Length: 47
Image 1 (cartoon, helix red, strand yellow):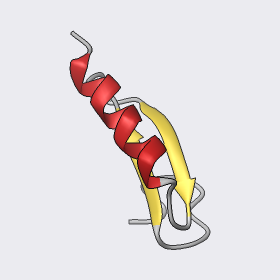
Image 2: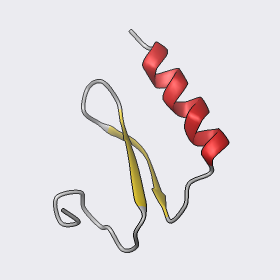
Image 3: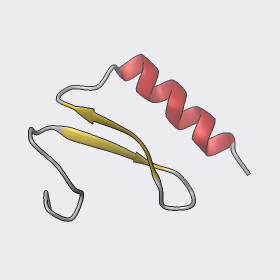
């Protein structure tokens, strides 16, 4: 799985993927959850 997502060096690693299948943000280690939630809400609102 790590090879499929590129340069995964540490777990947890979090990848945020938009509706077009593009990785828009990645976090190594624990993410900043408030920032992560804002980003997800923004991406879900996109048409």
